[in-house]
Image 1: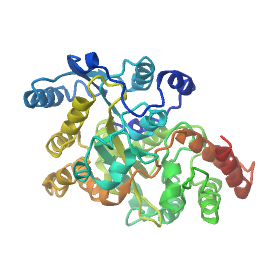
Image 2 (image 1 turned 90 degrees about the vertical axis):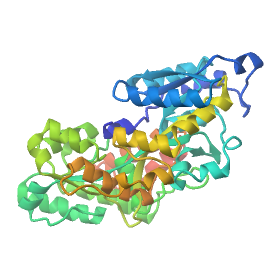
Image 3 (image 1 turned 60 degrees about the horizontal axis):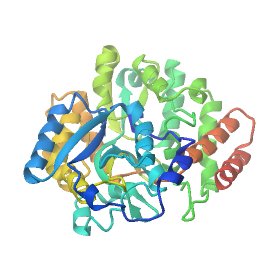
Image 4 (image 1 turned 180 degrees about the vertical axis):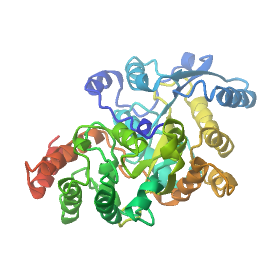
Length: 428
């Protein structure tokens, strides 16, 4: 579950063509009597076998025991294949009944009416069981298209050895502090403090920084809202770091994978990632892993922290929509979420499950990844999906990143870059 695995943002040029013909404008599922009597529910997950096979087999068996008239067929799809497979299945009206996606990719199809509208099927009482900010992550244009499942909030993984050499007592908590740390690390060690990608198709970390620093990306009408004094200040922040030599030059061409490589090689002092990645660092780079610790996620003046959400959606053409919703709610109830969170070292999206002591404290000799879990869970109260579900979210990221790059390379002034980015988005 690498950090980049939360970025299911790829835009398919054929989405509109495929779904314009395949999905009608009706908001009610087209279910005939024969379809309602389909023998089983089909449930797709993303690359969760074989590590969690035992968990899912047991959970499905428990559901079938409670609902003897319903059988569930579980299909695990490779991560790299999910987008194309679900697009094809929706277009051909052969989609499964329940699908594990995330709000970013799911919202692309939600905007084309591919998923069941859940507002009339899930009561307010049931919704209140989930973290309010997380529930909002699966709402587009006022309609709920998904049910929250497991989560992760990022932490700041840092190299205590490099911090000591640079004379830094504690990791930065804000972007303002990050700029100071970046300068000090470079001056004292010759290394970079961190790596943040500006590749439009890759991580949205920089895009999220706008929201954390108090800059809304779009307004209520979906128009660019970052062409402001604060928006220009964020552009200037990143341009200044690059021009001062405090960011590696390849931030313009390399993705988040490069951030991981540099940190594991001991060439950067900080890495924004999920807490579970500390174990991977220990395995891949034992020397760096031995001096790695975790701190809360870096944020801006708003104090907002980003969260990566995985959800469950029910295709509008499900043959058994009622049973599909019932199964999705069963998978995401507090008991089952807590069990999965412990197995996968992720966070649950229900209020009750998050109150478990597993997310509150660890033994003094606990592994760094376990300590990071507590740090991660403690930030969930202020965590939210910083980039709201948008049908064209990657176009927004491209407009901003392309113009940021132009300003960083001196091809445009910051003011012109911001104006051009806003125009590119509004005229998309």
